[in-house]
Amino acid sequence: MPAQKIRLLLLGTGNMAASHARAFQGDPRVDLVACADVDAARAEKFAGRFGIKKSFGSLEKALAWGGFDAVSNVTPDRAHHPTTMAVLKAKKHVLCEKPLAENYPLAEEMAKAAEAAGVINIVNLTYRNVAALQKAKAMIAAGEIGEVRHVEASYRQSWLVGHHWGDWQTDPTWLWRLSEAHGSKGVLGDVGIHILDFTTYAIGMMPVSLQARLKTFDKAEGGKIGAYTLDANDSAMLSLEFANGALGVIHASRYMTGYANVLKLDVFGTKGAIEINHGMEWTELRACTGEDVHTQAWRRVIADPVETIYRRFISAIADGKMAEPSFRHAAELQKILDLCFTANAATRIS
Image (cartoon, rainbow, N blue to C red; front, side):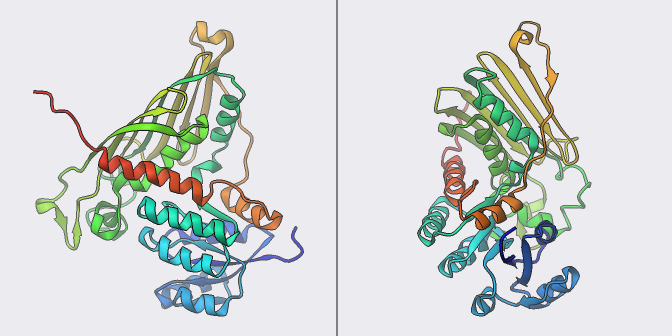
């Protein structure tokens, strides 16, 4: 326990903020002292719901008050850059939701500012919390599957098909994710960043080259519903080569019917293979290694629980030592995602 509790400001009180509030209020090292939102009434209501003593109608007012050590930034994607830059200028530690920024130049600016400020900076790539991922990474790093040769990964959603999360045609919560004008980078920006990090973190390598295909499907007459132009990508496919020459394919789509929210990762090596299936309430980790490669027998692998990013953020502040995933790492991921838009081409087969 630190000598004093770490005083935290929650910035943004929308849909994701409740998860942050519960996580930090469950950590005895944290005092959630305030929340802020551009909608002052929403911030005040949120503060009452979670027993937070202070609420502000703007970040500027919260910074003028200044009675906090760190910020958890849960604002919409397009607000990440301006709000985080202001927080860094005030030399406050910051946990920022993904994606770090709307594009690589902004993300790079944030990474440089965080490094110059000398504060703890972490991006909330929440699937780092999956114990199976941490176990798989350790097994791969230990050489249990030999040299990585091929990777297959996918992030599977289907809310454009089923109504398990509500009706996207009438709910702004989902409609904005389909509209570039409302700040969306489509499925690639929304969940593609997760499966890209999931994959590269597990194998310990970033890609050195890529090809990409992005697809937006017709979903409404004239491509619009009310104020929302439905022009963001619905499906994405990345073909990658990694630093050691291994090849990989990563898919992300909102049309993978039958899957609400599932991450799948298969890593094949010269001595074995590992696969992860991770859903909203379950995870399975399997391996085919050793003599089993001759009979294609797979065994389940047990993974011990791991510390969440929320707790690692607080631990990093308490210890005065940086932790991952940092803004620098998030900027490198954003560089790859940005390249997918310029690499979005195909040779037509006549």
